[in-house]
Image (cartoon, rainbow, N blue to C red; front, side, top):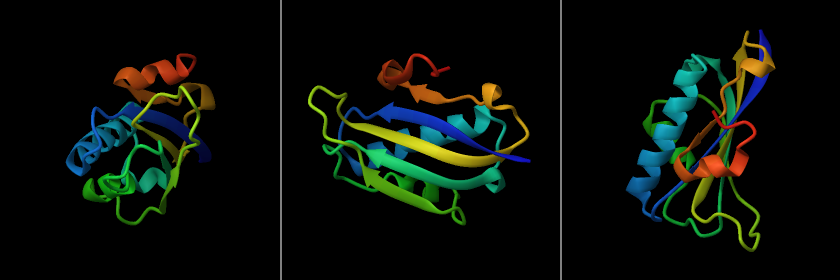
Length: 120
């Protein structure tokens, strides 16, 4: 079984903890479903959030989904002028037999504009 990486992102409408939980939860669920993954296939997940998000840790949404024994870490995204606001990005390391070209990267809503080259 190979180690692969899956990317994803979602733009929040507002900086509220409940909204972040909902949107990040939807992003993680979509990543798992599109790649036919279970929580046991996850090795680790990195979350970044733009500097305008303060209401909660994105990793808290993963814990609420039942992803409890996977190492998670949150970091702040670079504060680049003109960058899309209120974005949570995900980089998940997984075990998968899928070839790299078959990994489904998930960019929900407006965040699809961030990576038109890999967003599916």
